[in-house]
Image 1 (cartoon, rainbow, N blue to C red):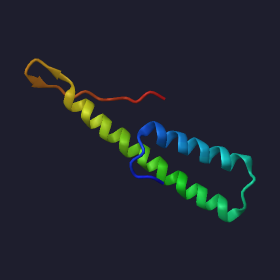
Image 2 (image 1 turned 90 degrees about the vertical axis):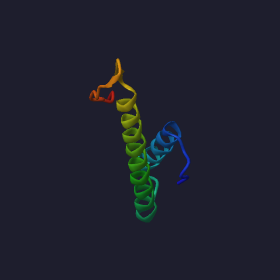
Image 3 (image 1 turned 30 degrees about the vertical axis):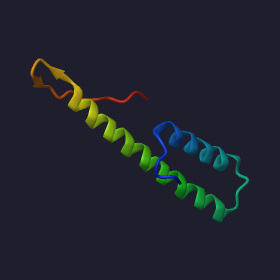
Image 4 (image 1 turned 60 degrees about the horizontal axis):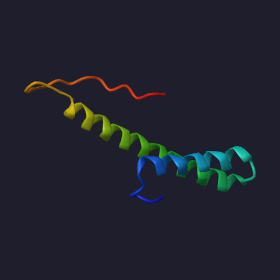
Length: 75
């Protein structure tokens, strides 16, 4: 897994892994390895989204006061 993938590329990689696992063509060892890769990508996506949420919270301003609002990601 590349460390410098952006969110969209990370999601694409995760979707590819899910597709490979859903096919059922992999042996157990390969499936476990792909699952581990998928979990790492999932954690990376969560981290990217958490960082974006923090930035959005900081950028929401009213007047001179910073107002923190909850950020609800779309499903």
